[in-house]
Image 1 (cartoon, rainbow, N blue to C red):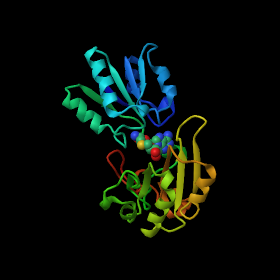
Image 2 (cartoon, rainbow, N blue to C red):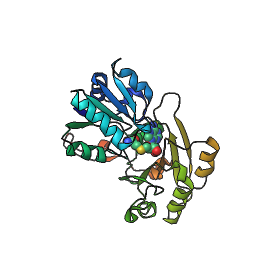
Image 3 (cartoon, rainbow, N blue to C red):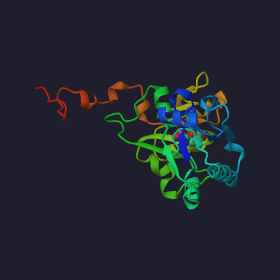
Image 4 (cartoon, helix red, strand yellow):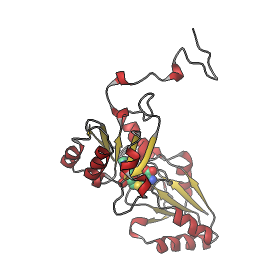
Length: 255
Ligand code: SAH
């Protein structure tokens, strides 16, 4: 049996209770070494076989899994954040299905959520944006043309841009040409939730490139863009949920 497990964004306490249990029971653990916090491996059994997939090729990963299956062992495939986002797991799941290997998936806390927590920020502010777009900028990995940043940015939603901090200058150009104001707030969160390593850089579209350059941050960072980050509280509307004028299933409006 193979368990694909979301490791969470970095803080070892942010793996789910189920993910922790599966990790602590696994005979074989294959972790995505480029991003998973190795502190999590302390939860493994002392005799667990541990592999870092960063240095492995697809067929090697499948070989380790198949061998463990033949020996009746349990494997955990540990992915950063939540496995459904930029996890490259679909091809592994397809290969396991094709080979008749049973597997399941345990979700994890994605880094875009850890970034919101680091920023102490709600992404869906009434009157500002009720939509969050999770995307990346096309680079070495192309993005379908109809979802280019330039097109997505036209909606002025909150944007969570993965895998693109090294392309920040291009991100800025795309957003400006889509009509985002140069004063639009931007935050770059590096290693969100990692104890002693998290860094937050706050700026605006017109200065974020310089600010990030000065900080030497390149990888393991997420770019958050949108007016939800604005400190201008008067632009926001109060959430209706707690308003005295708003009834809902659990409460009647007061006149
Ligand atoms: N499945 C992961 C994303 C993997 S892709 C998730 O759900 O978070 C790798 C990208 O995720 C990185 O380039 C970076 O953009 C982002 N990322 C992963 N962990 C991060 C963290 N702790 N802080 C900020 N960004 C992170």
